[in-house]
Amino acid sequence: MEASVVIILKRCESIPTAENYIGVDKGALTLARSGKRMLLAIGDFDSVEESDLSCIKEYSDAFIQLNTIKDDTDGEAAVMYAIGKGYQKIHLYGGLGGRVDHAMINLRLVSRFPETVYLHDENNFIYSLGEGIHSIGKRDYTYISFFTEDESIITLEGMKYPLTNQKLTNKDTYTTSNEILEEMGIVTVHTGKVTVIQSKDA
Amino acid sequence: MEASVVIILKRCESIPTAENYIGVDKGALTLARSGKRMLLAIGDFDSVEESDLSCIKEYSDAFIQLNTIKDDTDGEAAVMYAIGKGYQKIHLYGGLGGRVDHAMINLRLVSRFPETVYLHDENNFIYSLGEGIHSIGKRDYTYISFFTEDESIITLEGMKYPLTNQKLTNKDTYTTSNEILEEMGIVTVHTGKVTVIQSKDA
Image (cartoon, each protein chain N blue to C red):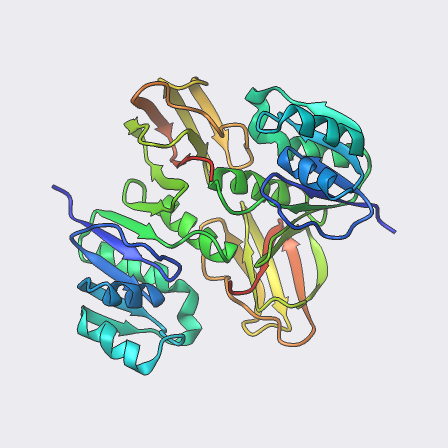
């Protein structure tokens, strides 16, 4: 059984059920206010009142207040903490929407840690896959799209638009809006790694 | 004077003032309902009623109905049409939020066409810069962030965190949340190209 943790980033409003939480900035306040105990509360907390801060501390096993200059790597710091603690599945909530530069950082974290960092919101489920054969559940997503940061070779089976040993580059835009036909699709990554976006319309 | 066009994508609700418009899918309906004449209405229009379709046609000089299989490259088709018609500044609205795969395609269009394709929403203004010295206005954005799809060397002046001949790769996440100190900052791209995200908090 792999150890997993849910990281609640500042923009997150609803909290999924989990065994372990890390709260980032206002995400820590959201967790504390919901009575959820955190492994760690981390952030610069410059937008949080003094009284809220004591509430956050009350609900967190560890507390790290970052310099405001480090503000925008809060999420990254939380992910690195979770990896350092041995968590193998790290689920980020509240990391999309709003500022696109923040979303970009979260997408790069996904790409840096295949099958480890997962990004969630109401319409999207995003993760990356390293070399190997991967079974992908359709879940309740309509579409499945593939992107690569560098270059990869992939095979797609059980999908509306199958591909065989297809080279994918970071300029390609055509591997979007594919669909898993039945319950499961198979993605084989022959070389490189791919970012997978499973999505549904808003 | 460079010819410019505003492309309204499906998710766009408020329309900026412009001389030339292209409407994509529901974006075309939004334009038609606001009485805006379009150079082109393009999309699969599968989510648009028959009566809406005649309204769209009434307001558009050209009309292209794409196969639904081509659905998700509607925005790309609109950009290629605008480039083919000689427009040098192409502003996309409604291309962020919702499905991240769609946003990724729009970000790749930005990167593919430096100083040509601009992506806008309430919190973000995104474009890319090719080699050369570029003056960047602060406008009403708090932050300025830099990303590259491949590799580039940049110098940043007039910013809170200046950089000199800094190599940037597509793995880097530290060039975010910089700030232009006065009215203008200077970005020199020595080699490669960079995507610039000017943003403000939601």
